[in-house]
Length: 215
Image (cartoon, rainbow, N blue to C red; front, side, top):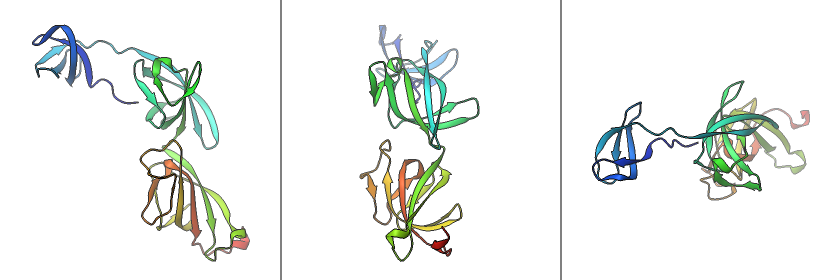
């Protein structure tokens, strides 16, 4: 979730003593130092406490799901694709929102107060599905396997990787629906790069020396 404490609505003693204006928080604390965005006046104020709501979070990881919960600013807008740190009983993990469940169904964007369940998937460490074919290109000898990699690991079309005992050259990448910042759902031009947490499937040419008949 994004940091909402950087700007607050407060009355300004210089230009707006009766009406609230947007203030930038320069120094947080009991007596915070703030600056009015209208006139630039800097003054100290006690910041209003931010109201939060506790929401159920479902985390998908490695083909399994488990429940957790998170305290969220009540007025914050949540959206599919956003990432945040989630504290669970086992660890603090990075997750990405995949869906938001309201009383009336699911949506891609909503104010936290209206959300009943936040559906997510873990993106700190991810499992990436790989489809590999031999150098000769025989389609009937294609095989599949999964790679466990950090979410920020980058797969690049045209480059050769050695991961998990496998050596291969990336030929194409299918991008996940909840990923942002990519022009196409499938990337297959040399130099195209996708983070592991954004990969739905990676297509590669096998570069290992082991015989395919062993699989």
